Length: 131
Image (cartoon, rainbow, N blue to C red; front, side, top):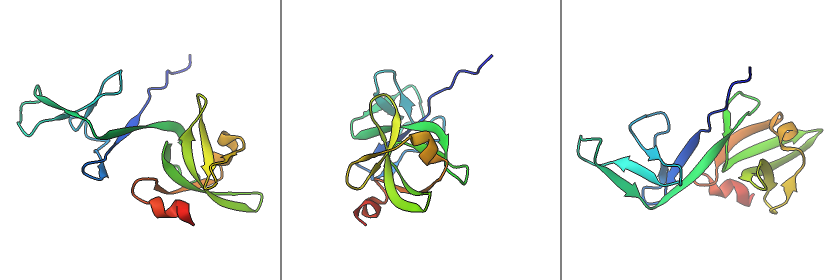
């Protein structure tokens, strides 16, 4: 019997300019409607503050050539058949694709991901997409 894939997410906090800790269970909570809550300064985890400046990104369940998990918003270096380029991982039409700096969707994503390397993401390394 196939295992059900549990979706994973990461959250970019626009106010703080950083990702919330994705491997800390008590760091943030994501509701089904996409609302992000963070524990308040109080030690009481029942008290939550709604995080308005959050961007939610989903992991693809795919891995780069170095076995690192690929997430929406990652910037990847593609190298297949001698063709080299940089691309952003985007969610488009119910799936994940690589989009080059000219906003063109590139070929079969699963094939491309076999030959890619994560080199950054659109929030921490936006300059990579300007090359």
